[in-house]
Amino acid sequence: MAQKSFVPDPRYFQVIFQAIFLSYGIFYLDWNADWLHYVTSIGGCLFFQYLADSITRKKLMTLGEFDRWGFSVLISAMSLCLLLKTNHWYITALAAFLTVASKYIFRFNQKHIFNPSAFGIIATIFLTNDAWLSPGQWGNNAVIFFSVITLGTIVVTRVQKLDVSLAFLLTFIGLLYWRQVYILGWPMDYFIHSVSTGSLLLFSFFMISDPRTSPNHPVARIIWAVLIAAVSFYLAVFKWKYNMPVWVLVTAAPLVPLLDKIFKAEIFQWRYSVIRFTFFSKLRNIIMK
Image 1 (cartoon, helix red, strand yellow):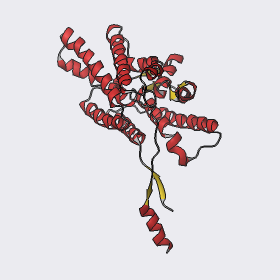
Image 2: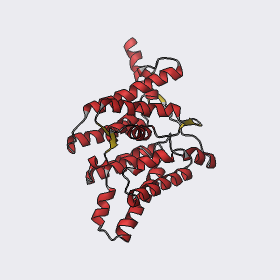
Image 3: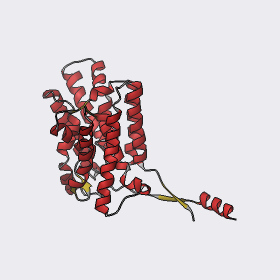
Image 4: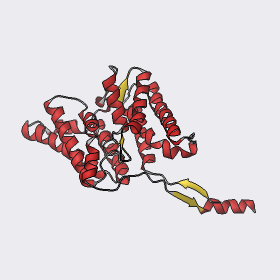
């Protein structure tokens, strides 16, 4: 009998890229690595996801089914590692629980309403006094700028959501250019410095582009991304609020079902393609003979 193997889907690459970014921060940017936070984020998300899936499907999930229950939440766990900061492991565990719980509690028409990691981060910050986002940890290095652009483009192109990433980035960056360079006359160096942060690009390519929480129709995705960018720009520039894209993404999430109702399109589903490798079948037949 031929051996079965799952064709790598975009989530495989996304997890690898996020692991590269985390390694980049720890070993190149000299972060004070919080290993307990990383282990708790990943272990907590996997544990709560396994528990939730086992309960809802009324059977214990197996490692052989990890690609069905594990990879998506692993992406969310890596986002917690990359963006969330806290002083206590139990706050991290709370964030992991809220991240997974949001996928089951807040649902509409077979979709998550909130981006899981964004909801977990914002809910944890809102409910506790010891959690925060730290965008400054990424600095403004040109290397990470081009790395995130390149790798992020690969990821979102494979899930056909490049439109939402580009719509958000072009709108947000365009508005910043208009304000900083055209209106205020600030030098281009300052503008480039302000838009080349790793956190902004990670949000653009790994959070707002989530195919399970963004609108189904391309036009709706563009409208949604432009709205998030415009509101984030206004709050950041005129109200001096920080980390606005993540906050606005969570706040704007309930608009997605409305946009899906107005702009009809097929709901995105992860597909698990299976390839039968005849090489292994032939090799086994030779050995058996």
